[in-house]
Amino acid sequence: MESRTRRLAVSSIAALAAVALVAGCGGSGSTGSSGADGNTLTLWTHNAGNAAEYGVVKQVVKDFNASQSKYKVKIQAFPQGSYNDSVVAAASARKLPCLLDVDGPNVPNWAWGGYLAPLDLSKGQVAVKDQLPSTVGTYQGKTYASGFYDVALTMYSRKSVLKKYGIRVPTLDKPWTKTEFGDALAKLKSGGKFKNALDLGTGDPGEWWPYAYSPMLQSFGGDLIDRSTYKSAKGALNGDKAVEWGKWFRSLVTKGYAPQKSSKSPGDDFRNGKTAIQWDGSWSAQANIDKFGSDLAILPPVDFGDGPKIGGASWQWAMSSSCSNKAGAQAYLNFSRQTKYFVDFAKATGTIPATSVAAQQVKGYETGGRFNIFLQEAQKFAVVRPVTPAYPYISTVFSKTAMDILAGADVKGALDQAVSQIDNNLSTSNYSSGS
Image 1 (cartoon, rainbow, N blue to C red):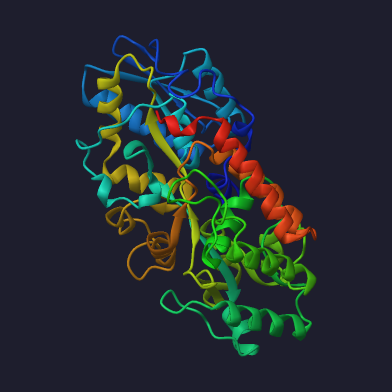
Image 2 (image 1 turned 90 degrees about the vertical axis):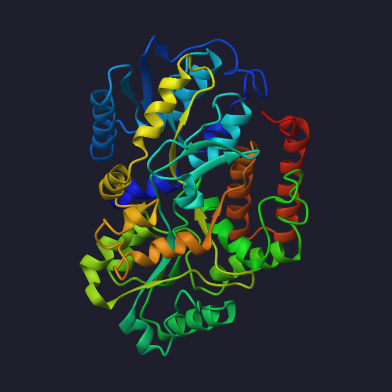
């Protein structure tokens, strides 16, 4: 479950950066019709091979089909690794299904490309306003997707370790500052007991890098793009605050606090006593509790100056713009918006329920529960990845840049180059035309 849930948070984005949307904005999905044979609608999901979540999808479809006689939904499941490519190919051929799931950060790109249609979710039991904002996919003021769960980044340590080294246990209301965090790492390093004072999980490639490390950049006061206009990364990704982040990021390696490249299983390294503090996610909580019990310390993210930040958004459900039976598709999506399904998905995936009401029905996430801290982190600290069609490209550029910085590249030069690449993509791709 731990590795599966981690993949929910950092699903494949980069592949989309190399895919040119066939006709630009509104091109591939806005003409023609597909996805339905009369009142029989096709639904695509990335959950082939994941029995637990797929089981909930099948149950929702079964319940919907039994609840009325007008529409029927049929499922086609794909392995997650090939899912995005399948959607892009189908969109190009105008053969998208009526209903499909979409990784949250991809929503703006797919909406701009004409793959998705805006949704009216006002007839569901659960109101959109009651969801975690990170579980609702929007673009240009319209809702294009909605999910049942999210995950949260966090730090893990042991209470006994922090006490031994005289390190304050941070709280949601009083997280560590940059100075406190640095002092803690120095103490743990000088103690000589741990191979890693800190492990950031840098052995993972791809989307993990912007998901896990851009929140730190944002906490310093930088960002992947200037979100006031979404037209340039200049200043946000190469300004003084971003450079400060880059130098700090590299210093973790030069000071010997963290490995440049983590092992294949940083979670095991933490549980086996090789690591004092691990930057990971809510998906590892149960395994860590099983190992350490009440000694486990679940810690909020560090406040590097502009408030604590974590990444947000996971898989969500949408309707294709080419669907020939949008009334049926929206009927299904609204039907699925029942609290019991939010509960079922969270239990099946080991994730944070997207509503507070559902959280009260999931063991550990209820008020006072051991995992309720993750719900609070998602409510207070989550920042969705930039809401722009350019995000897949931005993700790829940032990942390479952060890797280069960690390997010793000149910080300002690397960030300047990243800004140049991103801004060139923004200026040549006509993203501003909207959908």
